[in-house]
Image: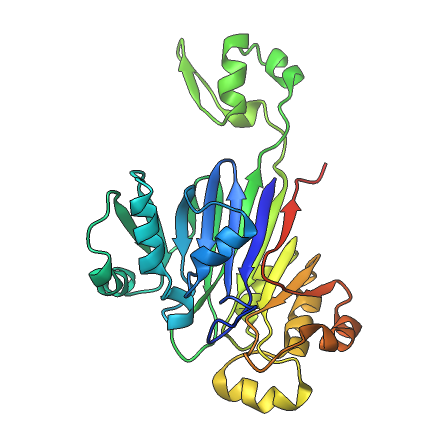
Length: 299
């Protein structure tokens, strides 16, 4: 089970009833945060979730509305006597940007590990795939996957005379060497089963990379800076997206469900534009601060 919470949905600046865009997920005792704009830790508190178990923070890009809340969050974590390492993931220049922000949070009781995006990352049960999108600075979207191995077959284990004491380690993915024989998980596990797939992207024009990485996601969270059709030129100029453009991506990627986020401060009532969005992709919803969902494995 993967818990998903859209912590904030605002773009550019926080508003009295709308925090800046951020996403938080929880899986197997570990929490992951994507982006950390001003007020993110307040928004997490409002939701009733805890930032103490956050082990990983991923950044889409280094505009202030996506990273300016980091120093305060680090200080709060330090004041809570955190000692566990914190891993930060982001585009090129990550350590330089974070260290500049840490001028106001120089001493922390925990280690910060930096991973600049170069490849698929496996962390705390997540497979994290970052993909370039099209904004006016280097910017990435993220696909988070929880993979699921095949079912264990006792019959196959018996047929191959695999000792009972090795069944459990093999089921957990371990390879065993004993008495000159190598036992591998593939000997007792069926084909991999469908896992959980979540794709998140903001601050971009529609791109083929989004379409490819969002394909058949269980949940697609996509920026919709503007709901109004007459702001399509503005969206192109500032390299953002309209609701309609996001809906076309969701439809073409064959996702199960889409949430819109990263609204312009001038967009007061996203719900007013959803009828036109659902003509393109019926299972679309306007994101709201604190909106959450449990994604479960399919049987």
